[in-house]
Length: 307
Length: 251
Image (tube, rainbow over all chains, first blue to last red; front, side, top):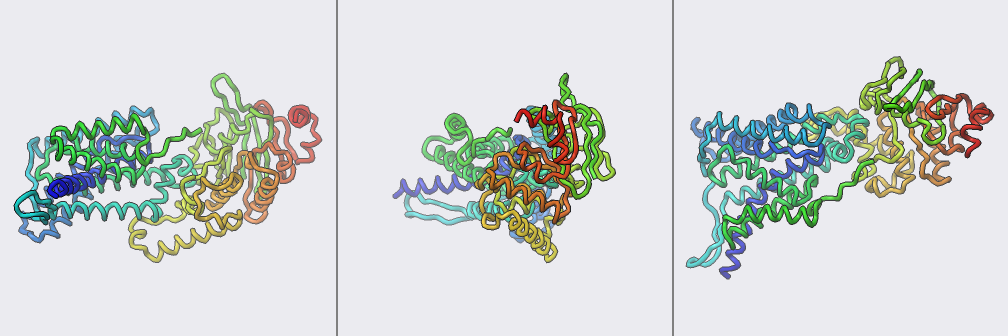
């Protein structure tokens, strides 16, 4: 019984982290699906989302606003707006001018953008950890009083709920809306989409904006969950989300969702049964194994060379 | 409506197209024929903006278009297909037709989310147009299949329908009958003629299938080794000695 409760606890923790990885991974996978580049500045967009949320929360609290739902919603909206503008601007400044050039050039541009944003936040906000107020506290406990209890906090429930809503809205948007339809067309054949009169530049901008908005959501959620942020906050989360995207099959949105959850669970199982220090080892080993045995990822389709 | 004058295209030391001229009037089907490697597709690629020609002029409705990017040319109403099918194969048949009308449905994100009457009206119109063309090319039953799962001949027809929903003035078809069986070729013939007759679209086509070319073309341009060899009506081409020697004689 106790073993089972312990296992369920790890599963809950894993799914919590995993669903936020999935939110970030969608940004990587959508951009890759459309223009075939890895946006290495995406982790920084997520970090900026977390900072914006923190600044908004601090500001609202200073104004004397204490009603929690209002604070959270305003923080979420501000974070999404700032991150989306950043995502849009990064594409405009650093990627569009080098699009269609050799693959390495956008990649280097992306790494440069990532370093730039990291250092910008360093200068603007300082390099030390900043505490993120735990606005949502408490939770449920299951199991016998005198031994191990499985707990699920309200914060974790909120992460699940918000992630679920985001994923549902995104799926509907991609499958039903006109812009979503154009996104799919552009990701299948950019040249043809352009010939048919779709403004491909606008669609590419839209994918960056959507990916950045989802990353901002993750930024707020994970900032609150971990309780502190720093300018390097985006780096490791970005790497993990990128791993999740590759794991699920880069270019595939359901793949990014699945990859994020698998990675999250794998990490928390490692922390729970082995040691927390091994969790990065396990997640990146998973990446290497996937690349060795199924290079297209779990849900990815083999890329057919276009003639 | 389209005039190509002294078009040349050089790839390094190779002169692929040398001083080719042709013109297309309104309400006309013009064919470009020639042996393999004659430079037909290169001419097409120059006309549609895939290549920047190294010499000559291309005038479409009074505008010089040589060297313009392909998407700008297609927006002027000069739309092309390719030798190989380039459908959005993972999208459904009807989605292929809807997405091609994206430009005509100029609405913003907000009106889509709010589902405004204006948005619904435009969406309905584009769906009507898609349904019309699906019926026209006989694919209504296939509307919700993935385009990649259609038979080859159906994919070819869907491609033409997808061009037509963009309301082009001039349609350029690169070997539309390649890989089709005789029955499908016949259907295609009728479709192309009806595009001209019923929808007032001019057509330029590259084709190897002589029966198709001779049946439907108003005029034919023959190219051999990058140079223009002859041009005229199908009857004139049939009787032209140079053409018989260079092309029909070999066949």
